[in-house]
Image (cartoon, rainbow, N blue to C red):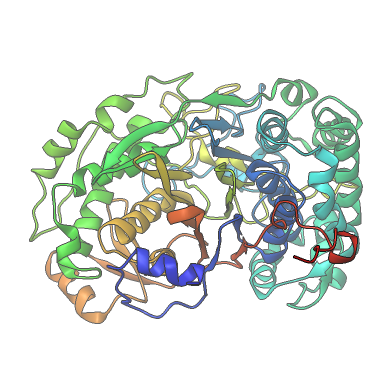
Length: 575
């Protein structure tokens, strides 16, 4: 019998290896879990092995990530879940954070009306500390997803996270580097420093991190549900601390948190149907917009990494960011022209303006500045044997969020307030209850009636451009999934173009000749987690080198129907 990974490679017979991958894919036909930490991937796989579905697995993985990837995600953050159930229905659950009810357009003192400091405020109050914290939608969103679409009880799904918080886990080099990077500011809060900087020294790779306070918090939620946080003693501890330190979050804010169910954005590209999140996420809109423009070029024939293809990717990114301001706000507050942005005729209009020999400035009705989204996020992709699929991106925004911890709880709050325009009178300005804008792009792609890909990643403003490039790698360049998620990326929002080290000098020189200012960077975006679906239920899972990503597959299955252990079975009669 052909091994599943070989079958997937044969099925994508046009695949061309253009670089060496650092990681290996996983393959199987009973289930697939891909996250940015091996313990979180194992937690999701544990749920599938216990008879749970993809939603159970995704939520177990997210709770575990809140323990083992505390710099990226937690219950005091926000995110977007894209779910496709086995009956074919797609739904997007919006658990994004919102401005506190006491916040207003002039809450913060701005320091510049233009230029690189436009989004900054006095005392960095939107970036670090209690005023940087927006309402937390994550916990409510995770529990609502489980209640509506899962099959296992909350305490079962949370058990791996509680276990790792209580018993501790080995700090990875990636986590150790993140702690060291933020150490100076983490040291300013005694509570978070007690956990991550014992004795004033950042934890090193290989040391164990025990989060006993957070384990008690998770146990309380597992026992009493999310209301213990949103309208109970745990929430009281949070709001009491916020009041003591000058934060904006109150009990009324926690009680008002709701998950919003939204219909996904839908579009097509070269015979595939794509589904992505709608506003306030900009991801779904602009992935489709860019692919619509690229559809008029034979980018596959140009070749991956060629100057022609690379120039085109940069130009469509510029176009998307020139138009992005039209779709970067909560639709409850701003009229978002989604239909225009994803229309094929609008793409044709923009395509006709591209100069293949020279980069150019692209204009639209843009806001004075785009929010400085953090790249510190996480992503989970899961598929089960029944046909349920989850692609979900979740975050506390900045690296270790607002860089403090609620005493006695182990909770690290988000710093989502830095995504709002601190100046009044703009689409992104602060308003009470207004949801943050995000570039999250958890995307599910169909080939006819069958799933083809589920993909997503962290990376702030670089997310939707990276998803677009991965889909071009898969569909146009014929890469296998592992190559597509690891392939060198590029990014621009209109100024210099960031180019990962994997691109060659010849390509960089060619871009410069077309007028680009090239900036060499070690990586663009974060750890991508993807699933590719093949024949007879086969699945490939891949995670890239930009994080601790791990894919785990389930193969095999239960015994053949009617099989019993031989001594207990009737003995054959002589013929």
